Length: 332
Ligand code: LMR
Image (cartoon, rainbow, N blue to C red; front, side, top):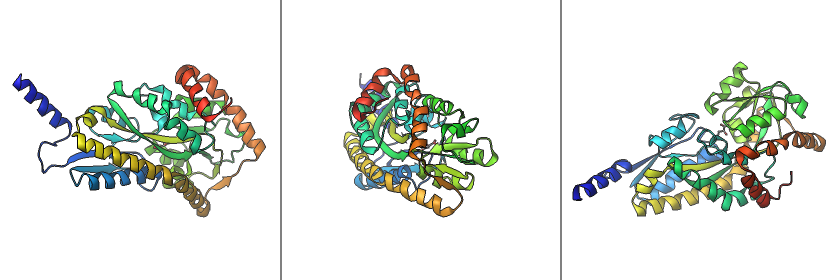
């Protein structure tokens, strides 16, 4: 009995990465794929600052931006294996994990603004989605905003017909694949770290992302046109390895939860401005022409894209979609 307890204690200590020694801080590796100068990059740095200050050095957070530790396609497995403790993947990247309901956030035009989105992330749908991560050994800690997406290419893109035959890079979401197909484009799933080069070499013709990601990856150097389509939302789930998180000393976990709450507010408060500033910087670069759609062009895009909702009911879940409609007032 005693040795069983001792073994369990050792296992718990190992799980929290060497918390055994009073001198050794608990190390939390936080890996993400975007630049530091983005809503997520700044949110991660702010969490690090708060976590280290408030635990008085008992926790050390190492932030690895720009896919420098793990890239798309690697990071989820690394989290499950405990090679990294914290991630903030976009909500479009949970399909390969088997939690396809997250792709509800990718449905075109489902949110008109951040307020509608927050009703979902702060409400029962957001909580239910996090519950679905637990059997995968993952705990959902927070939702972080980025913003509304633009489309880009090397030819002017205004109406669905302009997308015909374009190879468009997307994240690993079937909903996004169907979105591009609805426009007559050819979707190509690719890790974020490879997008710039793929655009530069013509492996793909265009892509979608909020301006903050477009600008900080220097896509203005390799894309001549950017259309202000606002056709979909991009945001993140901050997630942790569940075993690691549960094995933290209770006082540390509570402090980290508080730090996460405040870092979430910080990240969400800066998201809109980060994107506005990035768009202004793209404009100022003079390299990419910004296209503002007319109301008719916007309507044509919306008409072409809403079919994606119905088509993805079996994948995303009819109930999940209906609950989001109820929160946002969206009418297909
Ligand atoms: C992507 O296009 O892969 C991005 O949305 C990356 C990110 O995390 O913002």
